[in-house]
Image (cartoon, rainbow, N blue to C red; front, side):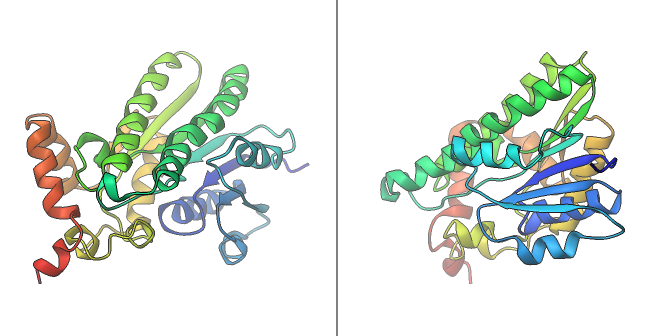
Length: 261
């Protein structure tokens, strides 16, 4: 069995997750990378200097999918867990299929907690371990036309802070990465390419990954990437939810991108 430390990274087929996996590989971690789509190319690009990479295609919105991922560790200690898997969903709530918004909740919340609890129990028993959870600045904003997604991120942001406090004397650290709009496949998958935010310039996922990875290594409780995003979070603490909802509407309403051309 490999003597290298082991990192699990979910949502690793592209975007922030893939960039974080690359950082872990560059620092000598063996990797288990997971996503709900094929990871053949992504896994091949992570192998370097003897680092072992396992690619697990699984649906982390389901208990069986989470169990399948955990089984891939084959009993090894998990030194780093990056819980990055998540889905977005655009359009008005009344226009969304029940299956679609349930999948967002099951992936972003239920699946994340099903993964975190057993890994954290293992880490606490050893008295060491680092966890990076991808939240979002969306968790600070009432998300018109992204209401379910923003609601799930509000949960994740809050949950990460709470569990981090519960475990503050355990030797295990919880870090919540809060990116803003990032240049990933998120907006295409959420059917938001016709929105103002979908067409706007976005943050580089590699830079966002570095922000999160370094904050995790430093044991920070939470980190917001980018000055603009930090300003939005600060403003959200002053403005009413009705105001942030109206602001979000202007960015996320279907067709708003075309209207701004």
